[in-house]
Image (cartoon, rainbow, N blue to C red; front, side, top):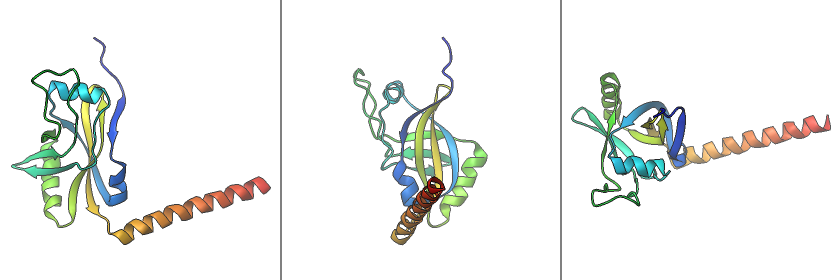
Length: 157
């Protein structure tokens, strides 16, 4: 059987970039059961309430919702079970050090298949305050307005 090539996006956490300052990102493999893989291949998952934490030298993905597989039997998986993430020792040690600092958390940004393997993009993030969110929105609006003004000026020419 031919191997799958490329990257296929399954789920994305768009709100994470709005709610957090992203400091660093990591790509991690996920330990899944058979029905979870089939549900992901069907394109069903939700990262909305998901987070990761480090326990006993291992990184665990928690609260990520992968719905039960429709054609699964009695051995179907639990939708919100904890899933182990596969990272290198150096990365785990770095995450342990950073997450012990106050304000840092691990947030999943996206869930995808890369060359046939399920992966999660994990971000080391610091929570934004409400005024930071307003500032980000105001910056984006100002940038958009400046681009519109420049486009009008080019058209007039």
